[in-house]
Length: 461
Image (cartoon, rainbow, N blue to C red; front, side, top):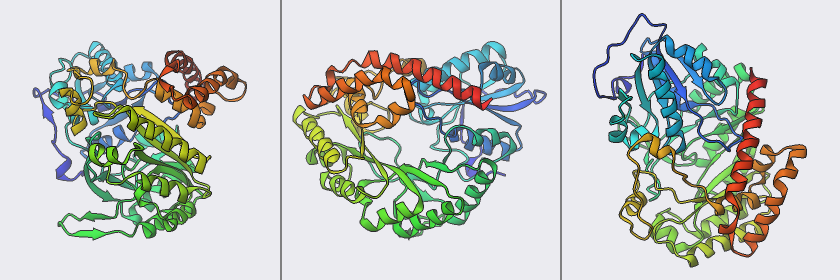
């Protein structure tokens, strides 16, 4: 049985009558999150709450629309008392509404539940959606469980394997609304989970989606603070993975990096890691973003990682409130320094997205140091916004993130994207990334990924 803390933490607009004669108590659905990513990570956002429902004795089935067909989902809707849809603020909200509208057309009595980050950050707006019956506003549901029932096995077997070694991140970066206490998995529990997934799938790679894989202290249920040795814990995780020859990728803060930690990460099987760098200007990092470190940490981390065999993704943000052109040029200069120092590194530059909940979002809504942002009030409205991507995003991606491009355009297909890669390098050197023809590339990648995903789905079937 799920812990009491996970039971009945939701907000019902009305008390629906659940038809227990139906074939399923709950149908959990994961909407397509993006049109351009070649990755398809395990849909944990429906699997953890699904495990909670299963622990309560409910009959649960799962649909991941990156792989499963609409026809399959529609057949299950007919025999489901409730449907649970997870979505993140932005594009996925519109895809979630497509599902909800279709569910109500097929089965008008079905009880629609909405969870995920959007339900937590925009609870009142989701409650106001006419077709939504129940909103799940807490940060997480079922994370103390492990979603490994027979109903989930096919989800584990396909796509890119995703697991967690910890949850939560206590930092207060102003662009982020996901601050929460850090809670590391006990290594013995992690070992059991990895063993189970490996025995089922034989997977040799895993993505750890921890918001903060390297934090070093936590409080137990009694309120006592415990310290964690980062290097020792990393080696403990590595010992679990090395049993099966599994390698991993994930995220870690640059200010955690030391030569000893890099050695432990390499030994543990880490092949790729991401640093949230955000800016190349010290004042902006400390005063506006409140990152907790400066440019020196970013440089030191990239120096330490160089030659380790671990591929590093350095992630930046352009266009946060009050950012000046000179501060943005500092970011471009830092990116060039990184690529000169560690040519094997990768870089992403995202456009600032005013996601609800953080201080930078409030500044955007007020128009403080940035063009005033009027937030949508509906899920459909959020889904129609273009967030995080702009010409600079695509230009930087063509220059410094060819791993994705090569996945999207393998073999002879590379000739389709190569002219844009060459143009991007020219515009970056000229410090004019905003002139990159983003719409052309978006359309090209949309159709390429659509073809790629169709081939994957056919192979999985």
